[in-house]
Amino acid sequence: MRTTNLFKRLSIGGAALWLTIFAVLPFVLIAGTSFLTRDEGTFVSLRFSLQGYAGIADPVFVEVLRQSLYLASGATLLCLVVGYPFAYTLARWRGRGKAVLLLLVIIPFWTNSLLRTYALVFLLKGKGLVSAVLVWFGIVDQPVSLLYTELAVFIGLVYTLLPFMILPLYASLEKLDNSLLEAARDLGANRLQTFMRVTVPLTMPGIIAGSMMVFLPALGMFYIPDLLGGGKHVIAGNFIKDQFLTARDWPVGSAASVVLTLLMACLLLAYHASSRRVHRHGAQGFDGGKA
Amino acid sequence: MSMLRRLLGLLPVYVFLYLPIAVLITFAFNDSKYSVSWKGFTWKWFGKLLENTQLMDAAVNSLTVAVLSASAATVLGVLAAVALYRYRFQGKRLMQSALFVVMVSPDIVMGVALLVLFMTLGLKPGFLTLFLAHTTFCLPFVTVTVSSRLAGFDGHLLEAAQDLGAGEFRAFRHVLLPMLFPAVLAGWLLSFTLSMDDVIISFFVTGPEFDILPLRVYSMVRLGVKPDVNALSAIMFGLTVVIVFTSQLLLRRKR
Image 1 (tube, rainbow over the protein chains, first blue to last red):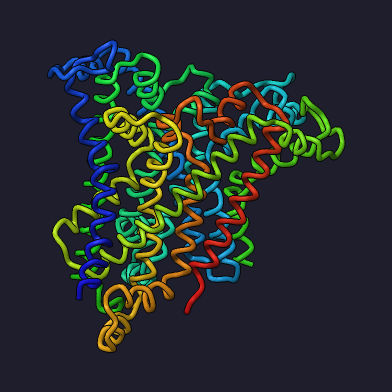
Image 2: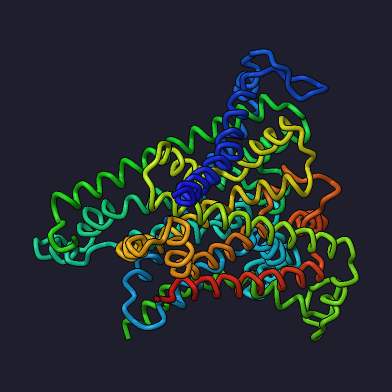
């Protein structure tokens, strides 16, 4: 009997303890730090202040935030536009080799994103392949470098994060019940109507999950604008990094992290609301065949 | 015919995903320092990697951290998955939420949050802090991998084991663990990959004395394009392909 309880206690306690110290506590500390005062010697002193939040209300941060929201939402939209038809075709694939096709999306998902960013630097630089191809087709006269442009940053974000959009989309499209599409068509809906009023609402959890997995990292991956944007395009990640490592202003950096975390919480709520809606409708309306 | 058309529809995305990597790897074998054009096949950049002691040290450090934190994350993650599957306990929802939050929070936030934690605890940035951080962000991935296999598990087998007199641990050791083994191994492999690839979190939690591969690569890449970076990338990409392929095979295997 004693070993019984010991195993149970260890399995619950081990993970619970670890998560409390290394997952919950750090977030509490960041939230706390955002309300403290900056101190030259010890980073922060234990005096309440709103300096951190005043710091991010500063026009400099507002501009950074505007720019990173622009880059991140642009990248998310591009990933969605490219990823949705792709995931749709892959999920409806009825032939052989589906596992291989899927694996070919999973591999980039796990490949080092820094390495993939470097691959783009290699392609886009002045004497890189893209420039050579443009010259060869006569689109430009002389070798051009696409590096350090806004376009390069967009390409970098989409290239790195596209698998993060495709996989959640694929998961929800895979679950899509074909008979619902047939029913819609039988009831006289054309292809566009079926898509907009059946497919899209039912895959909304996948759309939101995918968007979240692109949008949030896109705000933080400071090395993409660093390497591809040449420091001209900064995102929230660069700002936070600089506050912690260069400017040494922890309260401001923490306040910016809190803002990012709140943004994440909003997206999570949207995700839960939409997946609950899909499940509820599923249970009431069309469950018969599925359960 | 329509299948061919569908494949052609998928093709542009595959080209987009793989062309840059393919070009990068090809030029790891190019016999020219400036990689402008093809000057013939060579292995010499791989040889240069071996001579670069700084890089080799960083690689050893990275492998050490990856093996140790993947193992710790696997132990904790498997226990968490089993606890969530088998038991009702206070704070169960909280544990699930914490796992989920770790998995979805932006790396940058995790990185600075752990930095503040380690500074508060007075830990010097280096091996230990890296190990703790990597174990933390790998843990939920193990739990998710193992949980998805547990979802299809027939609970009667555990009841049978207990009717036959096995305690909780023996039931876990002899019934659950053998069945979960492929998922456990897959979880370990994925954690290893995550740890080897992490840039952002490591950036905040390591110190100058303990250099690791991704950060070494970052500083090399910032200095510009060099063929030995290509060679290194080729090796790292090859390793990822092997690991992901193996883990997918393991997850597919039915008992």
